[in-house]
Image (cartoon, rainbow, N blue to C red):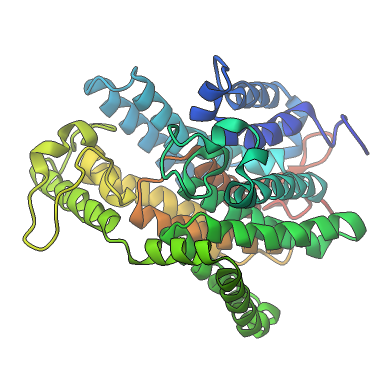
Length: 435
C-alpha cells in the first residue's frame, strides 16, 4: 500500500518528518528565519494524531514497565529542579529538558506503536538512509566545495561551534558525527533488505557516512564509531567472521584518504594531538565532583552548572584553566551535579533499562525477524552515543532521539502485545507484529 492509509497513517509520516527536520533545529531555524523549529510542530502533530487514533492502541496493547516509571520520575524531578532554581521557563532550561529527557522518553514509549510493522520500520530505514546521504554529501562539500553547501548558514564560521570541521546543519561536529554513525548503520541494514536502486543508494550512503565521520575531526565520534562497529559485529557469528576484513578495509581507506588529501592529514593530526579540549574537560569534570560533594542530594539545579562553575573550578598543577563557563563533559556527572545523586541514579536506571537492555537482550524467536537487524543498528549507534556521554554534554536532540526511539522499537516484544480487530489480545510480546 502506497501513500496514506491504515498501514501508513499521518502520524507515521509526521514522526519521520520530525526526525529529518530536526537537523535544522535550534541555530538552523534561527539562521533560516523561522519563528519556530518545524520539527517541534510535526512532533506535536504526530503525537496528537497518535493519541486520537483508537485503532492504533487497540491493535498494539502498550504495557507499563519499570523503565517507563523511572523515566516519568526523572522528568518530574528535573522539572521540579528547574522550577525551584528558576530555569524551567528559560529558553535553554526548557529546551534542554525537552531534548535530553522528555522527548527521547516519549519516543521510547510510542516507538512500538508507531513502528509496529516491518513495512513501517523499513520506511524509517529509508528516511535515515536519505538523511545520511544528505549529511554525508554535506560533510564532503564542506571540505572540498563549501560554495555548494546548502543551506548556506552551515559554512558561516560565526554560527555554532568548531568551525573548520564538517558540522552539517547542526553546526556542531559531534552532533554531525553521532547522526552520521547512526545513519551509516541504518543504511548498511537497508542494503541487506533491499534490491536494485535502494540497495545501491544504501551502500553509497554507508561509505559516504564513514568518510563524513572522519571529516568531523571529532575524537569521541571516531572512538565511538570504532567501538560501535566491533560491538555490533560481535552480536552475530557471520559478522564476527567479517570483522577483521572490515577493520582492515576501513584502515586502508582512511590511510588512502589522508595520503590523497594532505590538508586533511594535517587537520587529523592536529585534532589527534591537541590537548586544550582535554584540559577543559578535566577542569569542569573536577568542578562537578566538588559540587556533588557539597550538594549530593539536590545538586545545583537543572542546567545550573554553567552559572555555578566559577565557584568550583580550581587551577591544577599540571594543566591550565582555559574555559570554565561550559557544561560538564560527562553526562552521568552532569546529572549528579545538577540533580543530585538520586537524579543521576534515576538517569542511569533509564539508560540501563532502556537502550542498554535493548542492546544486551536477545530478540525473542517469536518476534519479527527484522528486529534482529534493528538491534544491530541500535548497538552501533548506542555504542557511539555511550562514548560521547562520557566525554561531552551531548546536548543535541537528534542523537538522543534516535537512540531511545530505536531502543523502544527493539524492546517492543517486552512492552507490547498484539490484538485482533475486536481488541482481543492475541500474543504477548508483539510476536504477531508484521507476521
